Image (cartoon, rainbow, N blue to C red; front, top):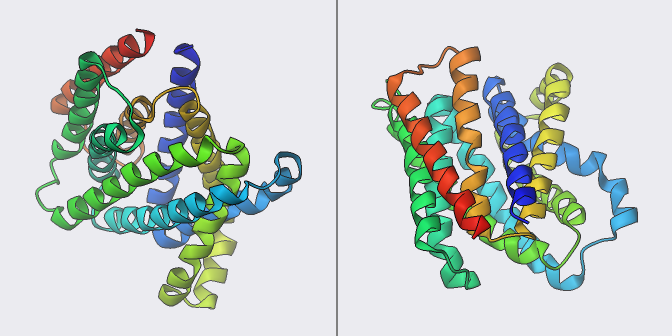
Length: 282
């Protein structure tokens, strides 16, 4: 039973790192992040004919989650505007699972074994270390603050979505969620950008926008499916292995620094994942 959710989340981690890499590479990160939410929900809306719309009791959860996701996307874009992918992404994603581990037992009644708690601590600590070990971290205080806000949003929507996806089809949930997220972000995007800018950006970047959007949707669909199979605290921690992939991408393709300290931090993450898998098997 443990192998399926672990496999789903690890695959999701690779896809999640990939779409974050796409957003980071774009000149207009706000536009790219907005389309990442809006495009896949439009493309896959016909699937709702098969899955059906979420029931009425799920819509308050969806609306709340969409608002949190919008805060997350805006904070993430702001963070990327101030700092490297290999700084922002680890700090945001490394802090989030520890917040979930605190909130899930209080709000959802989940119980974590000492081994699981140690594993989550190692994953979160190692991931944060990946970001804070960057040479350019010291000059990135605004980026770090935005990354911490991003982490709070990640923890909040993870717990919210655990509640929502238990009540409806995961595909219907994620299509509607991303659509609402895109709609909520639209006034902010139109305030920041005029129509001529949006049209120009679309013509130049639509292949990347579509690719990033589809990767984002599939990545989160896998996470939501895993949430139906195991505790959200486990999923939140396992999902953040995407940081290792994102840091490697940043080093390999964006010329961002990657040295011995980051290798050590990655080993700490690996130890944490090993403990988490042991806890899930138990």
